[in-house]
Length: 154
Image (cartoon, rainbow, N blue to C red; front, side, top):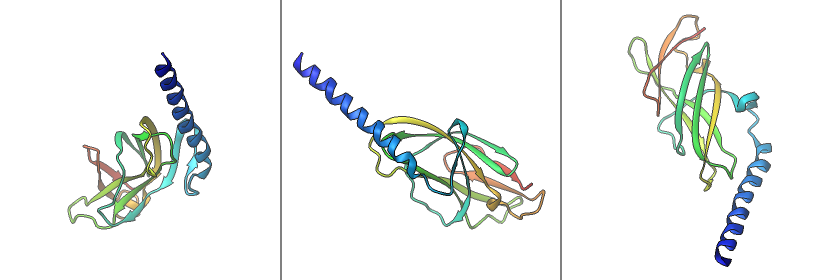
């Protein structure tokens, strides 16, 4: 009986510590992101060089709306502030339409907690356009997502 009481108290202390860290770290959000309703973050995509080191992430849903990519994803954590960015490879294939590999980069900040957190990002992907001319098309291949995304610049 005493052992289960101690275990119960220890677990309660552990989980309350994770929750307080999460609440206090939300103030430290990067300045290039705007928090919106429904836990949606908006940011701009950037070009980079692959391969990129990233922490584990599950992509659940992807939707293209004009020049924005909406990505719903999940990851484990809960004790540290996580950051995300969408990186596109600088180099594209010489096919018609061209193909650009993209990746959702996740920085977990060594978070050891195991809560399964779902989140949504809305990302301006104009930087990924083949040409910034209305009607210009490119295929985006998102790492971790089975379907290709046909992006037409608007």
